[in-house]
Amino acid sequence: MPRSKKGKRSSNKGGRNGVKGGSGASDDDLASDVLSHYSSASESASVLDDGTGAGEPLDEQTAQEETEDKLKQCIDNLMDKSAKTRLAALESLRVAFSSRLLCDFLTERRLTISDCLERSLRKGGGEEQAAAATVCAQLCVQLGGGDESEEGFKILRPVLSGIMIDCCASVAARQSCASALGMCCYVSAAEDGEDLVKSMSHLESVFTTSYPNCEGTLPTPKAGAPGLHSAALHAWALLVTLCPASRLTVLLDLHLVKLQACLESSDVNYRIAVGETIALLVELGRDIDREFEDSDTLCECLKSLATDGNKHRAKNDRRKQRSIFREVLHYIENEDFTEEKIRFGVEGIYIDSWMRRRVYDAFKEVLESGVRHHLQFNPLLRDIFGLGPPLILDSSVKASKISRFEKHLFNSAAFKARTKLRNKVRDKRADVM
Image 1: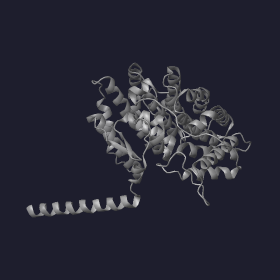
Image 2: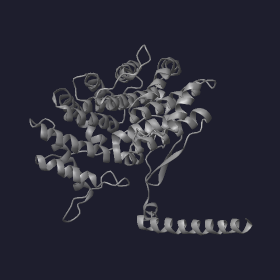
Image 3: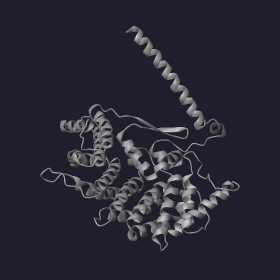
């Protein structure tokens, strides 16, 4: 896991938290059962909170046993002959892994789950491969980056890499494998230089096919290629944050100029992925050398994209592109980063650098809406973002939380007060004029 090296770039290391236990349930009904069971979990809920539907509310231990029974049945269904059943089980596990901490439960079953995921990746169709790759990444995050996670990554890395570079595999599966390879390597193998170098090399072999040829011309992208290139580039950028200064210098020389050429790509999402990666590389370059210089042509290109008004591009694409590239340009020219605060429970983290944004976005992609729950309770994420051990709130703190309706009333009153104050100021200005 990213320990000493992660400590340099994003923060410290990881840990574990979770539940244990039980068995039983039915087939296709099980998938929707587990989905509904987990989708109701709120970001501030306890790891063991459970909505059991109609009837009397169950005590915590019974709810935990029911949860584990459903998860065990999902794991059994990963070995079913029916592709539909396997896919439903993967989807159920995806939602469960996103919304709760299950480390102890999963640690006992990690080899079984890893074997099932490997089978789905090797023998499943494109949709099953894509779903299995996502669950692989979530499993590593759940296991917390220790020996167990590293053990699973050793098994799954060759399969994930193989699908990602296989031109005959489905684009969705390749894209999902690229993202999973980056996350699994970031969490599990940062201290293993060989695994890090191999993973980065495989990712490079995918997105560098978008680089200009020897004549300086960008290749015509095939169907689905920009999405695959974006996923591989984002995963690679995540791993770049773990590289030592000596390796970073080499990567900057190899990729910065060629990535600049890719800003002319015809796909808006790939242009944005390239722009964010360039900003990250410049930031890391300045970290190791305060005299690090970016080229004048780069700033000119960024200015063009930040003010792009070409009518042949969709209006939403232009708006999205201008917003991102204004941020990139401000950073390149002035080292000015637009800070963002992510709130969860009674805490929050500041996204105040391109490196921190890349790490947060990577976890958000894997955990989706559950990322705030994991920031609140998952020792791995809390360590990476420098939050310390999970907080244990006493009843007085919980009772002091205000409801959404109360927040709405408070915000409305504050808005009205600000509006009145602004109107008074305007009236005074009008009198002066």
